[in-house]
Length: 338
Image 1 (cartoon, rainbow, N blue to C red):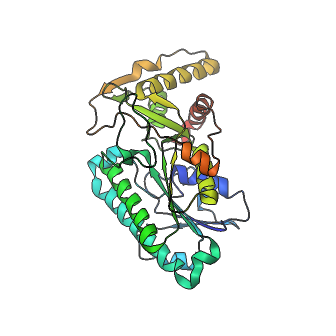
Image 2: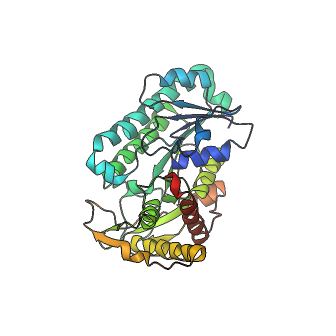
Image 3: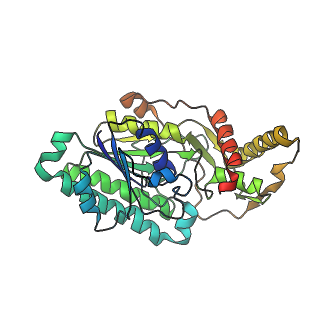
C-alpha cells in the first residue's frame, strides 16, 4: 500500500482506519466523504485538515467528479466504507440506501476500473480494492445454529442489508468479469468512541445520561456479536496486505450477547462510574422500555472467523468487557460534545 483512497472516512469505522494508517508516513491517504448527518468530522476536526500524508475531499461517490479525483491521486489501494448503514432509516427511506450503497459502489468500481486499466497500472502497483460489508447480508441465525461462513447463502432481511448484499455481488462480478483485484470483508457489530448516537451502544449511554427512556425492540433477546472498532480496522489492514484477491473474509469476535443483556450491562457500568465520581446511586435500568419490534428484525448474527485467522493471521486483540467500559467512560467524559 502507498496511495490509499478511503471512501466514507468521516464515518465511525473509516475515521478509525485513518487514525491508524496516518501514523505510517509511507502512506498517502485521500479521504472521500459526502459528510452526512452521521459523519464524525465535527468531533474530529483533524479529518478536515490537510497534512503531508493526508487530504480530505467532500464528495458523494456517485458524483461524475470521481474519475478526475482518482486520476489525480492515483490510488493503488481502495478501502470502500462509504455507505448508509442504519437499518431503521432504511425501512423509512430505502431510496437513499439504494443510491448510496448500490449506485455509489457501481460508480466507484467503474471509476477505479477505468483508471487502473490504464498502462497496466494494476500489475505495476499490486492494487487492491477492499469492500467493507456486513454480516447482515446473510440474514439471521436461530439459537444454537452454526455461525455464518464466507460460503453461507445471502438472505438479506432489510433494505439496508439488501443494498449491501447487492454491492457485494457487484464487487464479486467486477472481479470475475473484469479481473478487478477485489476483496470483501463482512463484519459484525462495531463499537467504540466516536460512534454516532443512533447506534445501540451510544444510544443507550446517551439516553441514560439524559435520563430518557432506553427503547428495546420486542423482548430484547436478539443476539449480536460485538467487535471493538480498532480490532476491525486492524483486520482490514491485514486483509489489504495479505488477503487473497477475489476472496471474502468474515471478521467476527465471538462476543455474542443479547440486546437486553448488553443494555443492562451498560446501565450497571454507568451506575458504578457515577457512584465513584459523586457517590450518587441511580438505577438506570429503570429507564429501559420495551417497544414494538421493528419489521424484519433479525434474531441473531454470528460469524465464523477461522478463514481470516488462517489466511492473514488476524486475531482480535481487545477485551470486550474492558473496551465496553472504556467506551462508556469516553462517552461520559465527552458527553457535552454530543
